Amino acid sequence: MRADAVIVAAGSSTRFGGEDKLLADLSGRPVVAWSLAAYEAAESIGAIVVVGTSKTEERLAGLAAEWAPGKFSRVVRGGTRRRDSVEAGLRASTSLYVAIHDAARPLIAPGAIDRCVAAAEHHSGAICAIPTVDTIKEVSDGLVYGHPDRSRLWAAQTPQVVRRRAWLDAAAASDDDETDDAAMLARFGLDVAVVEGSPENVKITRPLDLEIARLILRLRGRQ
Image (cartoon, rainbow, N blue to C red; front, side, top):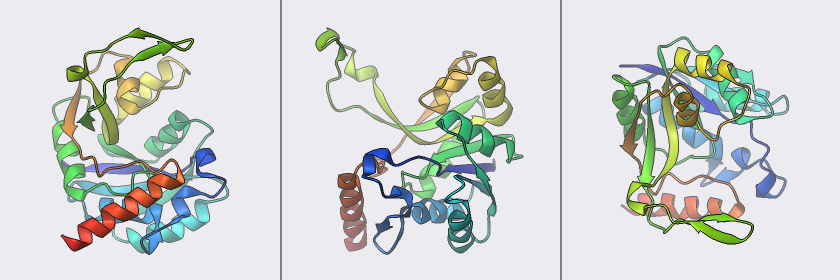
């Protein structure tokens, strides 16, 4: 099965210290370029739609043409919330299933993308995730009130592959935001498969995360 991809690059980078984290240098190329190259290399991906902002869409178009020349389709403008940006990307896509990826996860492997797309085929969607290694507590007003069973907890990553029409229908049911695309599908009780991802699929949120990504790339180079 083949799917289009929506690479979401419309965030505000507020926790990164003012600089646009997706344009920051990561081992010789902008952060977003790594995601573009991975989706270009993934066999399961057809067209790539990038979601940007009014300030970045021209730069993103140039980077997409450089790093995903065979699959880049267009840049569309996102919204203030993640769900608004995802919706803009999905409406610019045409495939039955779409792989949604946060551009802030630059170290996704093409093989992981392909596995996630394949897993979605007989479901409403599929996500990459990794088992949680920390003990998680539910906290309210500074006090612990819940102790979830760690064996059932997974940390969600991207890509998250969704049946395009199902996501749009679920979004239309309520204007409330969701933290990710599996949660959007859950509004209708739709099933979502899980593909084990990788601890290397880190999300760039703070400057420290960029240093961790650089270290991972150096280790990959040595291997």
